[in-house]
Length: 254
Image (cartoon, rainbow, N blue to C red; front, side, top):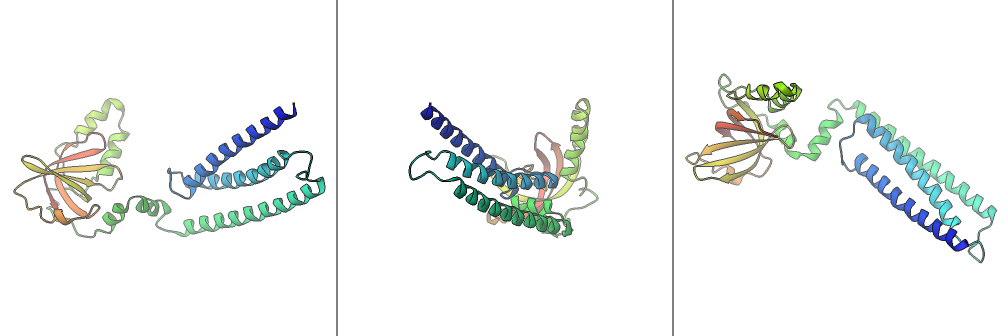
C-alpha cells in the first residue's frame, strides 16, 4: 500500500509539473514573446494569472518535494525545519510578486502615456514593412483624378466584411473597375510568358496585391529591391478573392 501511495504521488507530481510548464510557457509566450493578439485588458489578466501560477507552483512544488521524501532515514525533515523553510519561501514569493506587480504598473503607465498606442508599435515589430509603408512620404505619383487614393484596401475589405451574406458578393463586385493607387511593400516578382507578375504587401498584414506589367516595361529597379521596400502602385480592381486584390492595367513607381 505504501509503495502504491508513493507511486501515485510521483505520478501526480509529474502531471502537475507538465501541465504547469505548459501553462506558464503559454502565458509567457502571449504576454512577452508576442504570440497571439490579446487586448490590453486580457494582457493584464494574463500577467496576473502568470503571477498566481508562479506562486502556486513554488508553494505546491516545495510541498510536493517534501511529501515525496521517505518518512524515515537521514532525508526525513522535522516539522520545525519545514515550517522555517516554508516561511522563508513565502517571503521570497511575496517579494517576487511585489516586484512583478510594480513592473506591470510601470509598463501600464508607459502605455497610457504613449500617444501613438502600443498596438501600432507591436504591429511594426511583427511586420517591419508596415513601418516602411508609414514612413514612405513620396506623394502620389499618378493622376489623382483618375486613380483614387481612397478607399484603401483595408477600408474596402472592412466594407465587404460588414455586408450581410446575401449582399456580400454584390458588395464585392461593386468595387470592380475602380481605379486606385496605394502605397505597398515589394514582395516578389515572377515572369510569365507575356508579362511580369508582381506581388506586394498591403497596409494590412497577410493581405496582398497582385499587378501584371508588360515585358516592355523597364523593371531594372525591381531586380535590386529588397523585400519590404515601399512603392506606389496603381491599377483597376478586377478581383477581390480571398485575401488578395488583383489590379489590371497596372503600373508602379519606386
